[in-house]
Image (tube, rainbow, N blue to C red; front, side, top):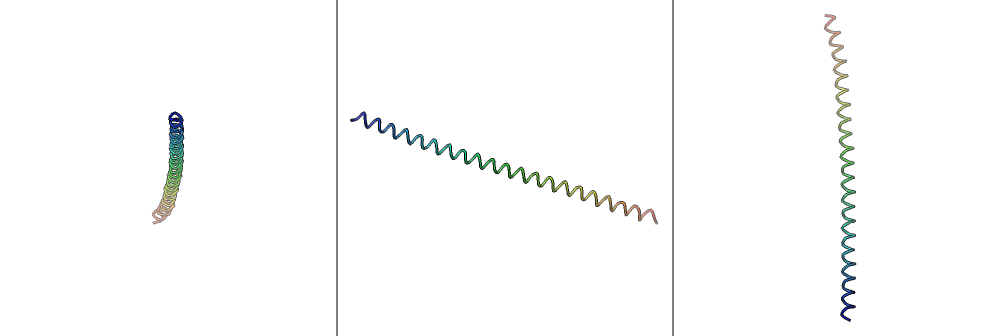
Length: 78
């Protein structure tokens, strides 16, 4: 009878260990997925900011060119 109780204890202990291992693996996977989602969102935000900065620089350059052209015309007519 003692051997049977020992086997039952070993089996329960092994099942508990497997439950813990499975929960740990699920938590690690969820963490990895959350990290990947955060990295993807960060990359998207960085790309959007870079694009907005580039558009602003092109716009500022264009405005400067147009203003310079009209200033040049106005100065040359004096």
